[in-house]
Amino acid sequence: MTRYRDITVNGLWKNNPALVQLLGLCPLLGVSNSTVNALGLALASAVVLICSNTAVSLVRGVVNTAVRLPAFVMIIAALTTCIELLMQAFTYELYQILGIFIPLITTNCVILGRADGFAAKHDPARAAYDGLMMGIGFGLVLVLIGAARELLGTGALFANMHLLFGPIANDWQLTLIADYKGFLLAILPPGAFIVLGLLIAGKNRIDQALAERAKAAAPEAPAQSRRVRVTGVIE
Amino acid sequence: MALPRITSPHATGSNRTQQVMLQVLLATLPGIFALTWLFGAGTLFNLLWASLCALGFEAALLAARKRPVQFFLKDCSALLTAVLLALALPPYSPWWLTLVACGFAIGFGKQLYGGLGQNPFNPAMLGYVVVLISFPLEMTSWPAPHSIGLVEGLGHILGIASLPDGWVQATALDALKINKSLTINELHATSPAFGYLGGAGSEAVNLAFLAGGLYLLHKRLFSWHAPVGMLAALFVMSLLFWNGSGSDSNGSPLFHLLTGATMLGAFFIVTDPVSGATSNRGRLIFGAGVGILAYVIRAWGGYPDGVAFAVLLMNLAAPTIDYYTRPRTYGHRKPTNGFKVGD
Image (cartoon, rainbow over all chains, first blue to last red; front, side, top):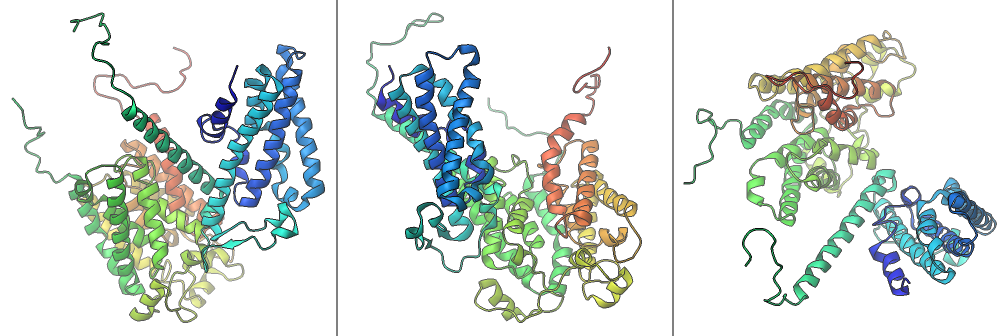
């Protein structure tokens, strides 16, 4: 049985959907041009992911293996439609900005991947928890890219947060660099690819450093435990 | 016994990277002179600052990648990238514009791919396109010939003083693109952007780069295939789509050859041995592709000049071109690429 701790580590770091599995790149690159867009889509994706994982886990015993993928997609599409209607009702402006990317949550490979790869084999509690962790892992990267692109592109952070949080967020915008010229490339699609590439490189570098440290900290193999060589001279 | 690894003792080493780069740098001198003569010392400031930035980035990234810094700095490839970039940027570009362009050219265009010889794109053109897309206002501020003094220009570079209105003038390609009502003759008579055949100023600059390029060709630093391919394709395209000299004119073939980045591109950019095609036939195709794309962007695209975009697009196509133009090796049959029908 998969431990909750492993699910957490997998979702947030070791098997992060955006940085390691490289799934769901279309919304990841498409809407990460500002923090508010990224956060909006991250929340929507995470909710769909948690609900779909739970639902798929609940029906896993009744769905025939041969038709499981269409069945899962139907579940995901239904949940996505719910989210879409909710966003249309409560965050209408954000709904208009995100546009096609909300219905496209249905086709987000992270969600179908987790439904088939995890939820269909685990109990509802673990499936829901996996959905939460994968959703957070995906969302964190999405928001990080969004914030980096917004900062590089406009010199400010958290602009237009009222689209998501209502009037209390009207003055959340932080202008970090006054009199900034605006670096258009960061807002345009190439910026998304470059920032994502740098994030992946950064993660790999950290993993490498951690592995080196673990190797240095590991105790030396005892002197007598040499592997027997089957060819050549036996030492 | 350790044998010294020397090949071809009769070769005197004139084809070392450093020698080649220095020759190319030497060949840019006529162009530098023409630009300085026409547009003031801005080009020289660009050159100085871009060289400093590029060498700084190169050294920092080499150190970060744990490569020998001195060895790679001495091959002058970063310096050449900086010089080509500085010549492409508008004179008196603000200091941060040049810094960003050099950072992208050296960092993202070259070192991230593995340094000299590994870059799929021409670093100078990559840096140029990045700033062209990101800072359209600054990148279209090309000064009018003989318009800026030394001190006010320096103030503009440092961002501490603004220049008097009217120092910027549309280039000939700009003027031709936005022109809706005037015939070519009227444009030549009224717009200060037009010279005798090409753009005012840019025709002399192009001729100067042509001279430098011919010197390099004479020195056999590159074969004639890529530049001839590009210039011929540009000429043929502009001849085919030359719709007279009315107000909807696309410009005459000579105008296109002597305006914008044509000659700089033909002799200093498409001849890049790393990011271009390898075989002679491949180079011909590569150059022709650049020429055709540059004309397409000039005539129907959103930007007045398209050489940089054309070069980057053809850089992408270079491996495919190489694949289909592999020369026959002596003693072997011609390689068959892809599917072969029959046989």
